[in-house]
Image (cartoon, rainbow, N blue to C red; front, side, top):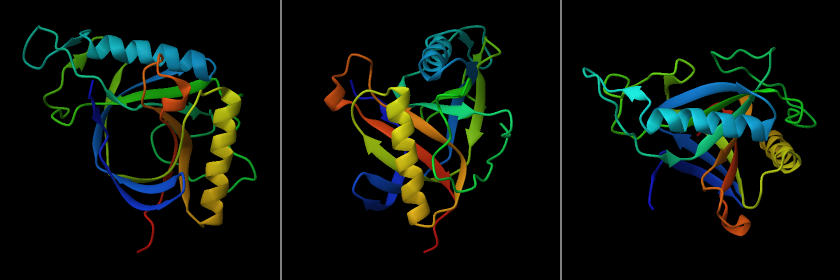
Length: 201
């Protein structure tokens, strides 16, 4: 079944790497604890609960079913990193240690027909709606399963490539997944996304 995906324009590509410009977007987001797998499951269930009807439509007491979109994105959090603004990450020899992260942000982007004014409001206060501005990302695409070790390896590869290209990284790396859990590994679409400052023309 075709579902809406977040809209972007590819500015440049190099094998599995792309520089993309994403349009502004409305997301539903939760912050959850646990390791990557636990947090992904918790976050997915909470936001799915919201879009499948645990909400209140504007100017009514009825709920509204919101269409599923792709990807589902998880981002590790640190007590030392602000959760309200992008934070510049100093270049590292290795990426952030995802296996030590115990706080994660999980989000779905909302279908493009919605704004904060016309979308149903979550009944669960854990679910937050947020408008994000247009942004630029370095994206590394790959297939297969997402163990913590594999996601760490791909994150390290993306950071190394960004350093080689002198890209100015911002915030924490994100893992985006596009497929349901029953998808065969070889057909799974996964992406490591790192926000960057807009590339110079």
